[in-house]
Image (tube, rainbow, N blue to C red; front, top):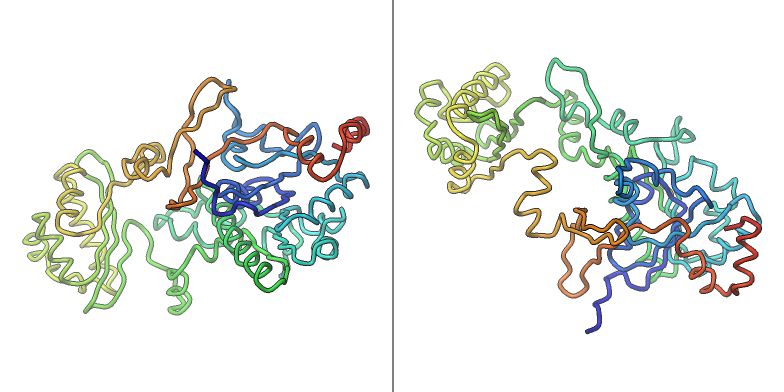
Length: 405
């Protein structure tokens, strides 16, 4: 039986990209069937090959961000290597790089250089701050974008210092936006014959991630209320998203909108009479009133602490209220809905003699499913890539002898 081809089968990508934001977009493309040629430094490779390495296992960092791509080594200081890169670009649909601003131009693979070779090329550039502004020339990292983009406040505890988080949300958000941007530009190139440069940045992605919460803060010109609950809306139509600990200290969350849902949820939990006596028969009374808000949350803290989390979540869901346990990372990796939908899956690693849990695909295509691969060995695809663009075995050996590849 023929294996179904991915939805991006036939798309060719060359990526001079490292780290996370610069590699995840192309890993996602590879999952969906695109041919991705990853350019690496001969003998060394992407620095992340040596990050987060455990005995007997590959690098979790490199594996997560580079599965399914082809590794091709080029010494970009060599004129021969630049010539090879140009040949690859001439056949490509997309080229990506996330070098420090100015480095690509200095080394002969800036947008102006490559569009002369391939006018329909989609050129994706990922930076820290964006192509304009006072810090455009500076390098960027995930923590820098988290620091500047507002997410530290969004998840802060009142009275505590602002801190960046352990999960690389700036890298990942930028990567997903780059993925969407390059698909839009590819559609334009194929339908209108127009290639173009697509600029994405860690900071820009983080600002987008702040969504309507940032819009609200800007329009009101005041910070959002942070902590365990988000109360929004109007007194007539209030909304609440809040987290509480159960009798064992395990956290859960629920979210609702509207006075009717408030009464429905609290009645189902058996809390409504207590809340009514405390002055909270209507959720709307806390809108714009910080003191009332804190009193309500303290009352709910006490009520939820009288029973187990599973009980509360089950009651709320049965009452058609959105609710869930708050998972740790390991709990998330074993969540039944995560597993059922293939968001986490297992991949066979023959070299290591075992199957390992990895990210699955966030998409499910009915006819052209994603295929989860593994990350390549350094230079694994050198010979195959060079043969495809016309180099003989003798010429390939010469390139290797001259340390071009």
